[in-house]
Amino acid sequence: MLRVLAVDDELPSLEELLYLLNADPRIAGAEGANDATEALRRINRALASGPDGPETIDVVFLDIHMPGLDGLEMARLLTGFARPPLVVFVTAHEGFAVKAFDLKAVDYVLKPVRRERLAEAVRRVAQLRDSAPPIPVHEPDPDHIPVELGGVTRFVPVEDITHVEAQGDYARLHTAAGSHLVRIPLSTLEDRWRSRGFVRIHRRHLVALRHIDELRLDAGTVSVRVGDGELQVSRRHARELRDLLMRRTAG
Image 1 (cartoon, rainbow, N blue to C red):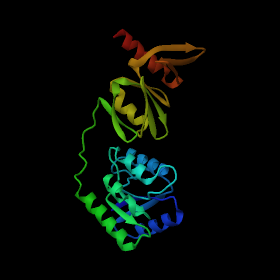
Image 2 (image 1 turned 180 degrees about the vertical axis):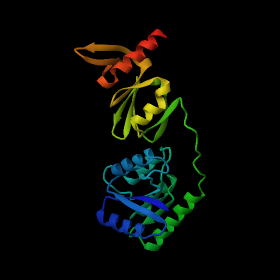
Image 3 (image 1 turned 90 degrees about the vertical axis):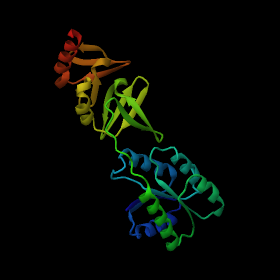
Image 4 (image 1 turned 120 degrees about the vertical axis):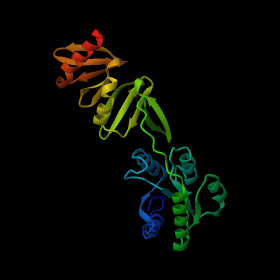
């Protein structure tokens, strides 16, 4: 079953397309976006949830003429993604077919959309997806963590991470070179990296002991200096942190 995102800035066209798509038994669900920016936001969120995540998008049915970022520009951006969805163009203009297929589009459907023609496009998408080799499953690399940046997956060395900040269901990884947002709860990283010298110092912060430069006591409050920043240590975690730092120094 396919999960679909339809993108069109004209609401009547979008509603008609969604109606036809949701009536196709091969489609598990079709949702709409009014512009390319919103569509890219949803696709990034789906990629962050993983290939089997609840927000997976298998194919984008994409208009070409839209204000701001047009359909061809959006499709060009998708070619740089690590796991891009398939693309079907849905447009009133015949003249962009060559450019569309240069961008590896699965199909090019002209408006007004006929049910039979759309069904053929869905058939092509389903056939292509079913014939694609499965994404290989690898054991996680304990020394690196994958992060998505503009559709490109980078692998950040865990040794470079100075501290981690909780942001809802996400965590922001801080390094000397910058920061990266990953869809992993802070509690999961705490369990995973405890043996690598990461310690919880606050409900919102996890810190690598090796990157703590100073422990500061001021009027009953405790903080640590990590690089150019200072992080508060909660009373609950202060004693454990002092003990760990003392043991590390003694060792």
